[in-house]
Length: 352
Image (cartoon, rainbow, N blue to C red):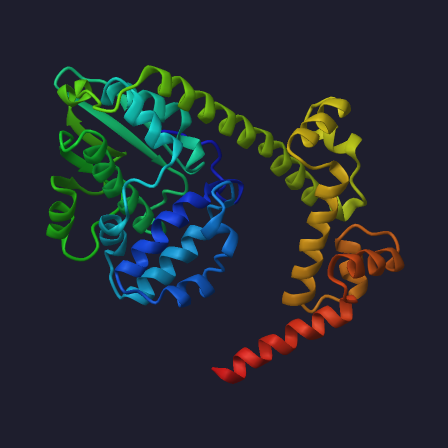
């Protein structure tokens, strides 16, 4: 089974491109999109900015709400059929400008992280049949079943589109159990579907790899590869921000983390860490402040921790320093912020 970049869902992220694909599909299916957006806290930026990322862990909530709203135990399968295939993403351009389907597949494998950290596929070439082994993060049974089914079905549709109908799946293997009508899986996937398998995979005839692309263009291919490489480099630079944030979270209760102490934990030269954060468009002090701000808001809004404890948990040595920082972040005092959040929550409860 393929190992995804990180086993911890909280460390993984998806491109906002996925939300932008799914949003019009949900509308087309007549679902209560406003409710889904509200309950899943989908921000306007995720619907508009293709450079945005969101935590992959949010998908658990998304699919739970989607099944509840739709009343469909196979919503992942059916949503995949409503999603538009072409939306101008760089992986699409790599496929279309490659000489054939096999070449496009190899290039997509190199840049799949541009879409999501949480799924990796491995291409296995066979004499008669070939296979894409699909590695899904958090693939521990039923919790992300809809995600896996949706992605697998969408891949089939996508491959059919880029090969102008030449791609045909011979077999789909899924690691989880069937839910609902098992015959529906074969109907939607267009091939036999096997459940409770050791690995998730998509099997197809090797001859399909030679299917030429009618849009093949060497100059455009070079341009698209250059663009994909730049996007991947930018994403890699963001990784260090996540690493720094995680170490700050671990060190904060012991006092204020420093650039030097975090660099030591990362086994990195202090100057190199500073440079990498600059390349990512931020600084150590900014990452620290952003983390403290989020943590303070969460503690004040969701817990009954005393203000003194919040000061301690966010790593401030003096309450006055914390008060000044919080006022700068929110234009409210910590007490005003907590009261505002509790009043809002009480209003929701009364409305229910």
